[in-house]
Length: 631
Figure 1 (tube, rainbow, N blue to C red):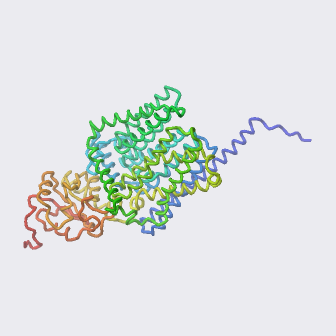
Figure 2 (cartoon, rainbow, N blue to C red):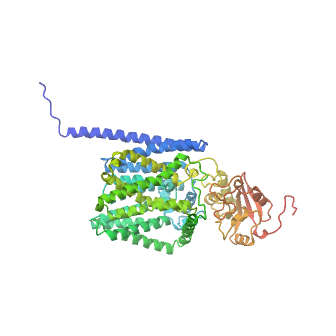
Figure 3 (tube, rainbow, N blue to C red):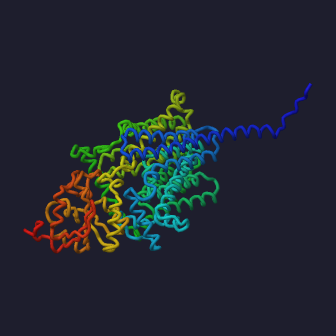
């Protein structure tokens, strides 16, 4: 007989560990392959859109690529038995992958309106070595230097260009924001799996994939917003005094950085931390492990820094923000009383009908999640902390905000609010997962299928609701779109004006403004009812005496005209802002041709589509002559 040697006690676990390691390696390898294939398909979809392929084709290609990357990562985040390190790794990959669409959209330079402003601000900070340079594109950016300071610091440390440093900053902050959502969800629900689901859902919010990954101040500030909340949540439940003080100190620091980076994000942080502080104070004695003062510290610390910043540095912020809220409320009232037709949703958009269906289904999916969540809360009763309930109440703000999309002035604000209200939506989704055994039996039975359906609806529907086609996909020149009206021709003219005339003041349309201000460092006019510079091109009469006097007094001595405004109506609806008298219409060619004969405009530069005139306000009102000099 052959005696069998006993298996060594140390050897068996090593074999089992080896098998587990090989299985995990195969799983991550397959995930990596799917991510790479997804990125490739996203790039292919962009090439298709640039080449003029049918929208159904490049949209479908894009979404196949996105689903190939998001679904396997979602499976890892929501799986039982996944270690903390594995979840953090999956969150990091999710952040990197969801940053890919925006990065590939314009990797080599600014394209979005806000990107031109922040890139110019960063270049000026780097060249001057000083913060707070004036900004001609978005004047309020001057008073919130957090983004330009961080991007300039990265450029100085790495030797990267201002644009590349900004892209690095946005990718890092995007990943850190999603990681902050994980920490917040884990702290509130005492479950790493629930925290991972919160991170996943937040990564699918309408602003995450395109808007908050652009080189602009909200994408940076949202990171500090998220970590201020996450660290305060940890401090509020910590039994260790030193630990509480440390986390609260960092949380207040995050709040202070948020203040100096972005105004709206700061307002959102104050409102949310205030709501949580009040809720936890009211119910903290009933529910265990609640320390209301932690939230009051965050609120008071951020408010103090914010008040000081507003008074001593950024006083124009109030006048900058107030018209948006007032106009949107007025327009909603008009819509409710049938005095206005509001906005035509998805107008002039090539978005396929099937994506529009997902866009409409996304709020319904969130409503279904909230219904299940409320049922769970009723069944578990005292197991849900008051802070968690406060976050869920904040998430419910998502529903009325959808109404503001109907108002022209409120649409942008509504979309921007979703980056904040979706923190509460993410917490509600995490709560449903944390207490999934309390769900109705039919939901438990089909939970994987339901989860996959919700994931797909939120991913496609939220991105569809966030930004329109020209922002998401590259393509041929499209007059009146921020992203597709830019041209090498406009950049060349901007740089030539700067070289030939200096850093002068220029009147132009809202699209040519981007190139003139960003690349030419020119001071560009801001049209308004008190300064109706649209009279120069959008009417067939001379500007009135007041405008001529104002132009001369402010030394706006140049006019730049893009003749393509006569070819088609602007995609965004107007050429000179809300006061444009030709909103929704192309500019009649005769309005532009008359400039060549007007005594107050002298042509000094011309390209295929752009004309540059020197203005002589003193000649306004003199008689117009024809080409032969005859009156």
